Amino acid sequence: MLPEIHESVFLAKGCCVIGDVKIGAHSSVWFNTVIRGDVCPITIGEKTSVQDNSTLHVTHDTGPLKIGSNVTIGHAATLHACTVEDNVLVGMSATLLDDCVVEPWSIVAAGSLVKQGFRVPSGMLVAGVPAKVIRPITDAERKTIAESPENYVRYVAHYREGGYEGR
Image 1: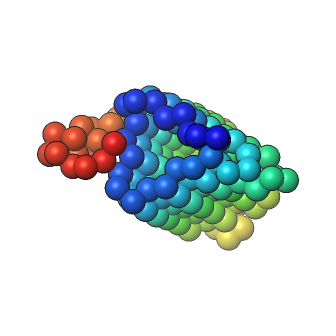
Image 2: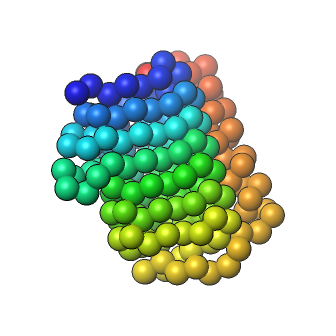
C-alpha cells in the first residue's frame, strides 16, 4: 500500500514514509523522520508537524497510530500504536507506547515515557519516566499549543521560498 499524502504536505529530505499512511493538508514531516505504516495504518491530521528524527510505527498486533490535527511532535519523539488527539504538544525525545491516548490541549513533556494504555487527560501536562499528571496547562502553554502549528506552516513556506528541495 502506498501512502496518501495531501499535496500541500512538506516532506523534508531524508524522511521515510511507507505503507498505509495518510497525512492531512499543511502538515510537515522533517529531516530523517521515519513513518512506517507497513502493517497497520497511521493517520496524521492537518497542520501537524512531525519534527526531525522522530519515529512513528505500528506492529501487526498493536493496532493503528492516530494523530489528530494541530499537533506538534518534537524532535526525536517515538510514537508507537497510540492515539494523539487534536491540539497536543509532544516534547522532544518523548516516547508514547501502545494504546496510550493523549487527549486535546495537553502536553507530554520532553523526555517523558507514556506507558502502554495510559490516558493523558485533556488540558494536562504530563512528565517523567513513567509519565505522571503534573498539573493543568497554563494559559501560556495553551497559547504555545495553538501557535506552534501555524509556526510550522510558516517554516514550510520559508523553506519553499528559499528553493529547498523538499516536497
